[in-house]
Amino acid sequence: MDYLRRFSKPISQLLVLVLLTAWGYVPVAKAGIIGTETVINAEHAQQQREQLHSLLNRDHVRSYLAARGVDPSYVQARVDSLTDAEVDTLANRLDRLPAGGDLLTIALIAFVVLVILDAVGVTDIFPFIKSKKKR
Image (cartoon, rainbow, N blue to C red; front, top):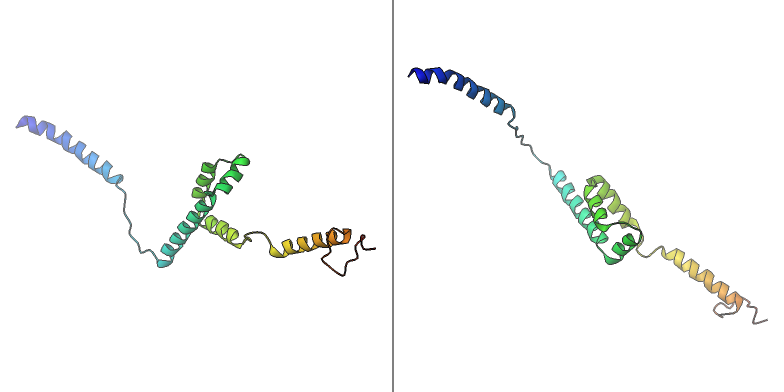
């Protein structure tokens, strides 16, 4: 019995010290209400991120990047590291870009080329242009 009393005090002190130390490292869980807008924004950002990934996984985009010395896996990692706001900005810019270029610019260039060809005498499309060969 004496043996037990002699070791019980240091063991109990050590046990109290361990419990107090462990209690200080216990993480505290906090619960809160998540708004609907937050969930929708997170899903929208995830969809935009997947859209960027699918764009960057296209063969012609990968070959274009590889021709310029950019590793496609590096680009994928960079897209993953973007914040939700940056992904939204990038996706919105890509959506606003014209798919095949500006149609008006292409039509104007084609018209100018045809006028030049008609003036030189290669074609005879426009009757109001007097070519050198007709004279």
